[in-house]
Length: 131
Image (cartoon, rainbow, N blue to C red; front, side, top):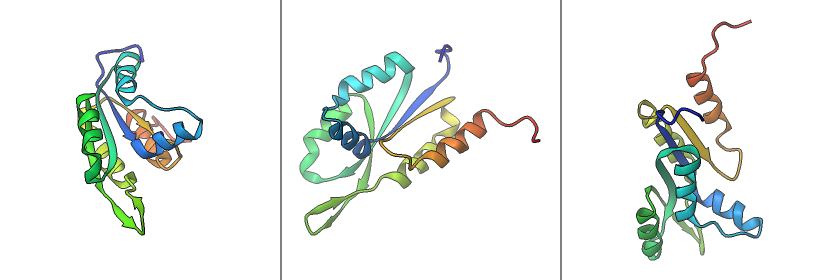
């Protein structure tokens, strides 16, 4: 990414990233991660998709102060198991924001967004002619 004049947005699936990092035995410092994205990839705006649980307000305040734009997903309590799948919201907001960025970084711990990445790659680098 040599051209820093391009507008770069990050779209982050917080739960998948967090679980993936924890699964490797590490802890992700989200504040430092945002600084890394800005320094390394010149990310202008970082959207963090996260399930909303009222008792985690201090976490949400911290993430907002760390520079993320938080996109909340309403959660369901399924007999003590909190579920808040953010995949649809991440895809939707990536497409809503499409006119505002030149490059997107999709950050997740799984392959759920392959079709989104594939679509964006075709839009940004269209095939000149088909064989």
